Length: 381
Length: 71
Image (cartoon, rainbow over all chains, first blue to last red):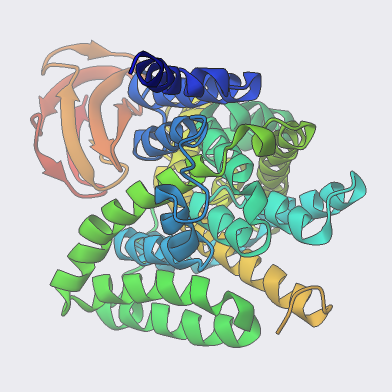
């Protein structure tokens, strides 16, 4: 009787006996993410479930990510199948207003330019020794678009999902710190002071309804591998603009998006097991992610300078920085920076156009990359 | 000569920083508005005296709507 009791009590200490240093570190990392989400308000909707998931998966003997484990189930059904990020995309489409872009269509070029960092980072990631598919997933952090990064990494590098998601969301919340020095470095005082007038181009309801349909058909035919990405964003947007399926639109941007955000966040946290996450590679991913976002900003601003030159000084190159996806954060950064140099400068709506272009741009850039890789035979058809 | 202070974009008035009769310098903040969940300070395009403030906090405004007149 006594020995049975002793053995039973011993069982209570098995967890402690099996706790590794790596797990302790990862529990602290998870706690740090919770702190950032709860106390600092950085992306709490994601960091709270991610941080908690990271703690859960590092509890010794709990086997959350083993076969039949609680987190494994959601990971296999939602992440490995790419269903979770795609459901999020429907919600994003339902929440996104492309009007600023349609009012000022030439600004979409800035949204395209803002994606070049992805391709430059891809080359860099390959150069430092990442495997081809891993390099694609790392480079896509430069899209500055969390769900796109999650979609691409869950498809091609699910083992890097934790590191890539954490990098993508950390840098998105750091956009107000990362972008301004680059914007200042690449522009002259005179350029930063350029005042852009009001855009007053009426956009008809028909145009707004046709836009998601036309973009889906053309972009998907051009880059079929990206059809799920583009299709889901545009389906959400069509539901919003058509105005005839308010219940579905509302469910997509509220109930469905909320449930999936919770489960996706937990799954991302679940990929942060100590032996997988605590590697030099994770630091490298964080570093390359930073490079990707900086390069995107730089190329966007440089393209803004080119447009400024071609339009005879009518475009303030600062709005090029909003060509990255981080919506609407980078547009706000542009407004703040522009007004610092010229108090009469109100760039917000122009930057919003570039930002909406960046949102489409990041999804299309990912789609193009997937199709190019298919063409090169790196991924299957 | 009267100069209008115009709303630079669609939004909502958050604060009115100046009163009628008050002197303003060029670039002084006259009104703070909110657009895209962001505070935008709207400044005096020129120095002078505020003749009239035409908006109040909480009011929705259209782009180019007259917010105040400076003389």
